Image (cartoon, rainbow, N blue to C red):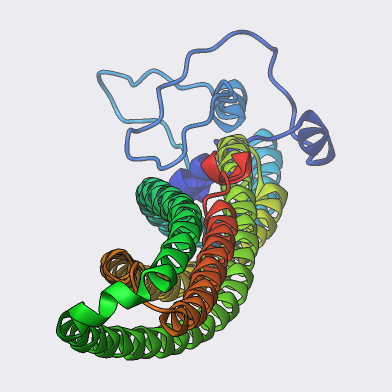
Length: 470
């Protein structure tokens, strides 16, 4: 229908379609006479539009063409209005042009509506994806903070473990000082035994001198035998007293024999204990070596986890910057962001698995340390038992010294005995020498046991490596 007979609704629809961007080529192909180009003012778009374009609004070509082709006639004030429904050649050509323009812009409006709907659907999908990515990033940040807190707690526990190791080292040093004091006590005992041996040798020299004098006296007694017949009763009494002293000496010899047997049994028990302690020392040395290697591996893993955490933190910061840049770009940047988020998720999962493995290894290390603590407590009990044995041996040495003193008194009282008593005394001296040899052998074994213990303590008290202290 001609443009003069179009209703008001069609005109408004065409105006809304013409407000979109129309190129000059489209207008030339539509056979519409173009108006002269001059700046025009247009009303601002309503505030309810969702998307405001930064480009200047295009000119309303429809309105300009309409006013150019159909100028507004002034309304007469009086009289009958002129007939306006009579078609003219200009009106017919303008109506045909307006009809073609209407069809063209209706088709363009349909295409633009389809594009807008597609753009809105894509925008909704992209916003939903962006929300999902934001939630994933928040979750990953929370997970990274929690893992950082766990690493801080692990570092604190490792520092407490180092403090405990230092306390154990101080305790071992105190034990070493106690062993040194025991060594000095053993040295004093050895010096006392040497002094007793010197006194015994001096006594032997004096006894030989007295024996020579006794031989001379015996000769004098043989010469004066005739004079001794008058003192026979006195000699009988002397013989009875000598018999009593001989019985006492026999009892003392039996007592010394029982002491020698007891010392032999104690020596055998000490030899068994030395063998047991040597086996325990070998076992403890192996456990200490294993613990040192495990500590080194734990420290290396902790450093690797720390470096990996720093790397993940740097990657996360780079990913945040990349996300800010990607928010200013279009759809292809979302794909890269999704791939980076997936890679970060895999890395976080690997880091979580590594942290779980490190936690299990740390628990195993704690169990091994507890086992080693129990072993050290058992070794402490063994050392206490050894100290008790040393004290018992000292008491036995004191008893032997008392026995030697009683024997010296008996030997002083037996200076005036006969040659048979001298032979018995010589045999008793031989037994005494054997007992002293046993005591010296026992002292040597105690010294070897002490050296073995010092070697074990020096291995246990070896300084901690710098990597573990760091």
